[in-house]
Structure formats: structure tokens, C-alpha cells
Length: 279
Image 1 (tube, helix red, strand yellow):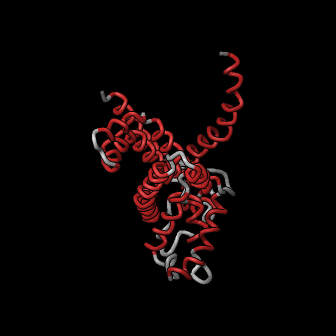
Image 2: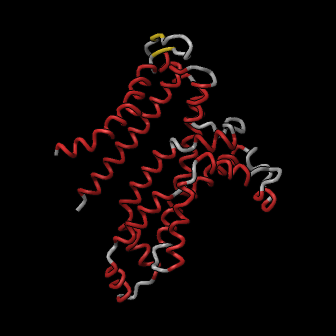
Image 3: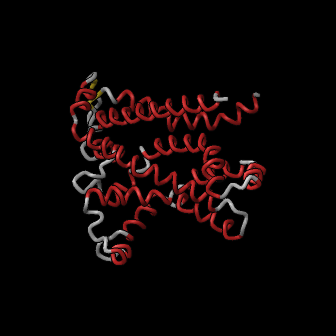
């Protein structure tokens, strides 16, 4: 037991130094006026009042929710489809599984710059092939584009969905085939119901992830535009802190994001507990 504690000590120290201390500092700054030049000045709930009346915050929150509504279903369908398609034991499926995970390990900046070239209205190949020259200058075109480029980064969800699919006993499909069930019946009445609990948890996890991963593509591809259509909460926090030097107010927004994430985690825990207790 003592050896286990010693092995975990570097992780605990790193977690406290890199996550715990910055979180405590951000919590303290959320109730101050701090520009980064002068020392923080305690203002109580002034930042909260400013947040409630801040139309830019509510607009960025709405943009973030739109992104979640667009991206999460697409990502989950793509992860599930890839898991079902590459579940077969063949050379093609064996070669396809690493390819399905590959975009996830590409650095976010490199991935965003690649899509910036693909979607470039002047010399981008997608603009030349499909005539999408105005895609990133249209608000909804930009929103849909950022949601679509996230569809290829489904590595973790794909691996989990594939593992769940492979954990289903083969004799269930054999029994269904003996009873005359076709592929669609096996998918809709056997595969999806058995995978639903894990897929539900993956969906909630993807919602949490989508609150954070949209910063780099929105920053590099659209810079929050056009007309603030892709100004998501992480990008708004970044601008507030490092463009307008309102670090105290930016901490308040970040704390609000944490509260939203905590609510989602609480919902996830309750759903997981309900599935576990269901006979």
C-alpha cells in the first residue's frame, strides 16, 4: 500500500501544481479586478453582475451550445459507424482502425491549419471542387465547417465503441440468425440496445469535450467570425484575458464554464448510476 502511494506521489504533485494551484488562483481572481499590470483589487460580486449583463458572453454561450448540437451527434454517429464497420476481422479492417484514430493524435494547430488550407476560398481544393468559396464568410457556413472538421477526431470514442461492440457475445448473433433475424434486426434490436449505456456516457463525455476543443479551430480558421458566429466560450475567455487584459473577469467566465461542466458531470453520474441499478 505504501509503495502504491509512493508511485502515485509524482502524479499527485504534478496534478496539484499544474491543476490545483491554478484553479485556486483562478477562483480567487474571479472576484477581483485584475489587469495583469497592477495588483488584483477585490470587487466582490461585481464580475458576476457584469457577466449577467454581458451580451457578448451570452452570445458566445449560445454559439457554444450551437456547436455542441451540431458536432456531438455527428461525432457520435461517426464513431459508432466506424466501430461497426471496422469490427470485422479482415486485413482491410485492421488497416482501417489505425487510420480512424490517426486524426486524433495530430496536434490541434496542425489539424486546424490543414483545414484552413482545404477551405481556403482562393486556392483551397474543396472550394475548387465544390464551389464553397463563401463557406467561411457565412455565419452558418463557418459553424457547420467547424463542426464537420471535428468529426474526424473521434479516436477515443471509436476505440471505446469498438471495445463495447467486441464485448457482445457472438452467440447472441448466432441465436438471432437461427431465428431468421436479418442484419437490420440484429443492429436495431441487439447491437444498439446493448451499446446504448456506453454510448450515452460517450455522448455526455463528448459534450464536455466540445466545451473546450473548439478554441483552436475557431481561433485559426475564423478568428471568432464572421459576425461573432464562431466566438465560443474558450475563445471569449482568451480574448477577455489576453486582448483586453481583464484577467479577473476572464476568471469569472472560466469559473462559469467549470460550473456548466460540473452540472453535465452530475447528470452523467446520475445516468450511470441509474443504468447500473436497472435490473
